[in-house]
Image (tube, rainbow, N blue to C red; front, side):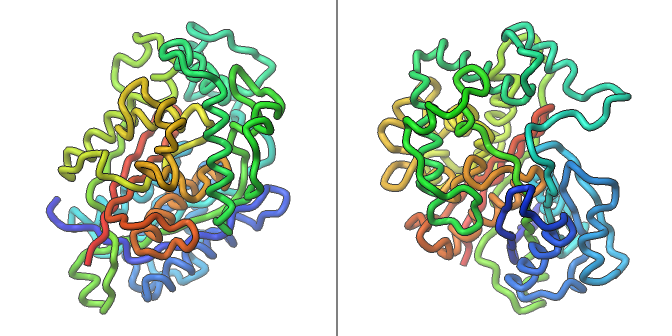
Length: 395
């Protein structure tokens, strides 16, 4: 693959609580419309479509884009758990770089049910059965509690034990998320919270309290990627390109290491990030802005190290020194992250893409990180799919 994939346009609708949200097709169409307007292109110029979502019947992607026309282009629906949006982007980027297409649309959306996530199919094998069995080997699983937070609670307890970090440091991540979200009109939860608020909120599992867990929300986001040749032919000048991208799953040793940190994808994140940095010839310390997958405060802390933003075991110092926010070494989740925007599964990865694109174009308003030329995006789905994308500013 020798061609470059440019980000021609991005779009995102404000996320909303399930009780106040529009339907998935309306939200998805809203995001696509914004991306098209941002790029200056008509839908007729799009040659391939990749639609990421988890909770929906087959061909939801067609339902969304048919609002703009029925042009016979291929529409591929992508379900890769919480990394569905970034997986759609991965496919669109790969199609452009390989020469399979000149212009591809990636759209992610989710009309989420309220409450904790749970299995939707009870008459067939559950994909995470082996993960759940491995978790029970290292953590006292409570059958009365939702499973997802227990994975991250176990990982949090493992990290605290391994490195001697204080549980209060996790709470500081939630405080930072709300502080950043105050300037983001797309985020659902923008009111500030104190560390005491976070710690005193109802306990969910292990060190995790409610304000340390991302809430289910509904939303949509989209990105259009194209080749340099396509951009020139259509008179557009995108300012952002994909410098490198990796999508990885687990290796054969996952269940042998007896680690909750590994079960929640930290190893996949580390491997994908290493691949990206090597492809781009970039040191992670050169990155000044990151949108990472903070589904729980624990995962943000784990991701600092897995993405190479700080050394292994140094996450607490990284947080206490303020190196994860404005004025520090790298601004993590200037959008407020999943903790503040909420987590509409299929939309999350492309919402991160939109934020990084705005940052690199200098269009993030009060959230703007100064002097950024590189932006990193990290999206993770249990089971496992880990996507790491490095975007770069281009002239």
